[in-house]
Amino acid sequence: MHSPTLNTQRDRWQWTAGRPETTGGWLGYAALALAIGWVLHWSAGGAQMSWGELANGMPQIGDFLARSVPPDLDILPRLWAPALETIQIAIWGTLLSVILALPLSFVAASNLHGWHWLRRTTRQFLNVVRSINELILALVFVSAVGLGPFPGVLALALHGMGMLAKFFAEAIEEIDDGPLQALRSAGASQLQVIAFGVVPQVITAWIAVVLYRFEVNLRSATVLGMVGAGGLGFELVSSLKLFRYQETATCIIVITVMVIAADMVSNWLRNRIQQGPRH
Image 1 (cartoon, rainbow, N blue to C red):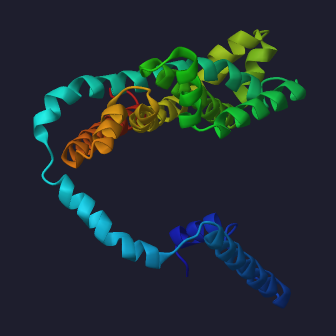
Image 2 (image 1 turned 180 degrees about the horizontal axis):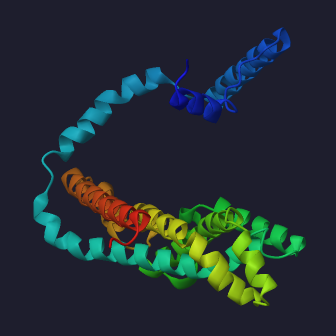
């Protein structure tokens, strides 16, 4: 006899790897495998993947690492201000993206209204926003408002808006429709339906996504400094341009510590939210 656990696992994954029952099914799987292999070979050629060149370049990588050791810890006091600036960029980039994403997510959700043309237009707009990399957005905003952390905030806010609105809308579409129908039957307005029927069901998922987005923004904020958007990225690029690799190593260490700390705090908060209040 099969255990209930094994049966449950088999049923859960059956849709992803169904066993062919005919020769045609096996041939279809073989054709799919050949197609995947061809696509991988084609993409490897376009990407000019060469493991030989990587092996030949290993001495240069080793030379860079040797020049970076030991890290120049004497510059740590100088990095406090850029590190705090990076955190501030991530905080405001995340906050503004949430503020922008919330109204768009309600429009993009298919189960809240019948204006399908508006929903499709909003979805396509979010797709366009998400397709533009933060670095490109930062370059645009640097040309508009000048160098400094503010272009980084705007770039993270705009790109994050597209990502968060998509996740928010998908979370709305997965909620139980029963409370919404009950509120509408009782004569509740659309705003009341959202406030008392939608938000209580999605708030936990939304908070988890926002925390994850903050982690992403913290990492992205360090990169945006490379195009003049402030933060630790600016210090990192400056040290590389001046061939001060020991200072570069220190910048990388500080960035790594910040990301790890943000990840730990975010995981702790997500666990507390998922567990709910303790009585």
